[in-house]
Length: 96
Image (cartoon, rainbow, N blue to C red; front, side, top):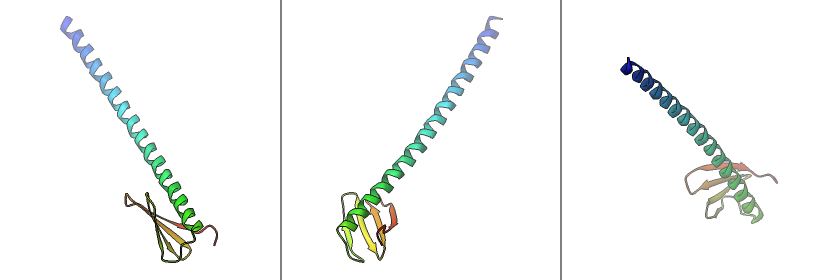
């Protein structure tokens, strides 16, 4: 009888540990997704800032302006921001 009770305790403990591991994994996944969304928003805001600097410097059409985060290329009334990590964001001009 003693071995049977210890078996139930062992199964209950393993079930509990598995449940805790699954909940921890799900929580880490949610935090990772939230971090990626916030990082994407930061990059978009940086693209707007770089575009606004390029507008204030009045770069000409088909001209490129380089920054430490990337470069801005003007195509008519559109501004294409190419970041150093390879991501590209195309924004229109707010003043034209």
